[in-house]
Amino acid sequence: MIPVGMRYKLLIYFRRNLDEFVSQQMLQALQPATLELSLSAASHLEQERTELNRLWQQRLERAVFEADRARRHYQLVEPENRLVARQLAQEWELKLHSQQQLQEDYDRFCQTQAQPLSAAERNAICQLAYDFPSNSQYGNLAGIRRDI
Image 1 (cartoon, helix red, strand yellow):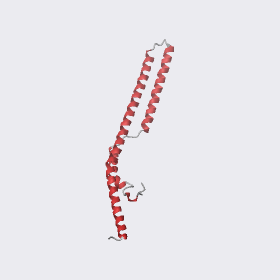
Image 2 (cartoon, rainbow, N blue to C red):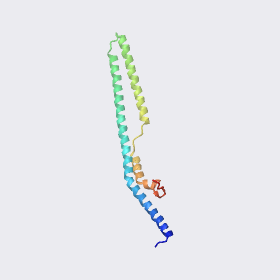
Image 3 (cartoon, rainbow, N blue to C red):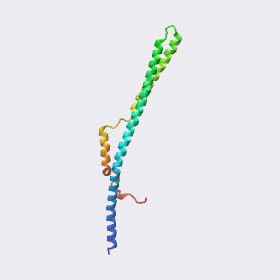
């Protein structure tokens, strides 16, 4: 029969080793998921940024087309039709102003958007995911309370 004091020491020893083993296994299981989620999120953001940029480009093209159309209408009017020419000139100015405003909005939008990940940044994400167990505050789960 093992003395009570010795049993207690053995339980503490085995529990500590078991906690370390379980925490290492859990972190190894999470490692691929961490990497996959990180790269998936980055890819999703790049796709969203590309789609938003495409929509902005369409809006800018439409504004350029409308301004050019207003210019052509103004240039085609007969000089004798001053009232019509004045109205067309106002419409052209309005279209040019709208085009300029849209371009400024697009420039502000581009400044607020995050830049796509470079190859070095992608490599850093991969490295962090592989180093997750060693960098994790939960590298050793033995100190976590078991009140769950």
